[in-house]
Length: 118
Image 1 (tube, rainbow, N blue to C red):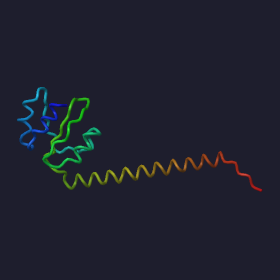
Image 2 (tube, helix red, strand yellow):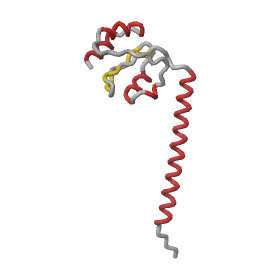
Image 3 (cartoon, one colour):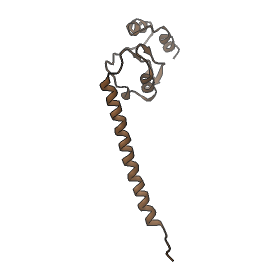
Image 4 (tube, one colour):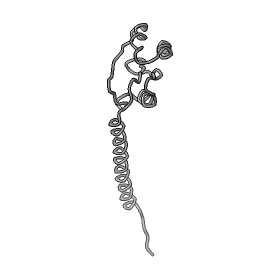
């Protein structure tokens, strides 16, 4: 983690990543090209979404090891639109599931209810 923080402190732009990583034993650099942040693990996903172009995220620990992400390009309008559509679709599905659950509870309540008419 200390080496990762040191690497992040020395980061001056996307062009310097190769040079910086050469000084870190066991470092691997992968160019993810256009990477959808939703495919990343939870802490990394949030950090990448909040990072600005030209910034490096704080180190996170994953199964693969300690990871840093350099954000070298912004999300295109299409990607932003896709994320908005995904969020809207998730809300619709959740609302449908909750509606079904509410109907199930209502049926169950009616079956178990004891109503006395006088």
